[in-house]
Image (cartoon, rainbow, N blue to C red; front, side, top):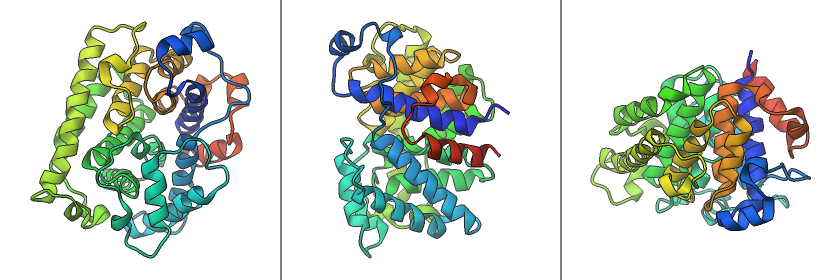
Length: 333
């Protein structure tokens, strides 16, 4: 077994740690600080950000939900909501977390319906930086996987583009874990987006769409899928004329918002599908949200190549290593 879940989770954390020191820097500043991007080394200690912390929170929530029975909306919401609130109050929540996550998690720490905590105006990458576990858990139907991916986003980021990008990110992780060829991945994701463009997962999202200003749930979700389709087109164009030495953000965006984080991370991975460390380094040496771009690139590379993708001297130093490996072993089994 290639241990796709372990590979994806470790890769996500490694990318997060590699990109943490370069976030908020432009490429010239990164090169001045770190040297040539193809030679970037994992910091010591290999400290991660809220990206990995919230991935683990979601992973724990999913594990708890599935221990209680068949995965469904109420069974998923309770433990994930509790994990997000626990993260909000944790003293380790000091890694420059996004404002949307902070505000939403503060509101989730109450008796109000979760839809009232969701930030419908935000499509920040906090929605999909943490969604990889949904693509790695075995035994889910397509409806469960899509619904869970969108629901975990909606707990904090309720913008339809955040929902669609989270769904696409989980789907990409799942496809790669199952052995999809990287060369066909963008086409598969575009087809998935077209197929789901008008599908509102009411069982999972409830009346979330009514808190926006759209005429129907279909209009609500179509806005998100259309933005994702547009950035996937930019990704496809970049891959037709690849330029590995050029900052990927120039082609697909800086990654602060969900659809750009997905596309730019995919670009970094697809430029080097069989060279996982090079993909991480390219993602970390970007002018945008480097840690989130690199963590997603690491998840894609790890899902594709498995746990053996990562050298032991890197994997053994990553923060939260024990918990990452425990979740990976559970889902690989």
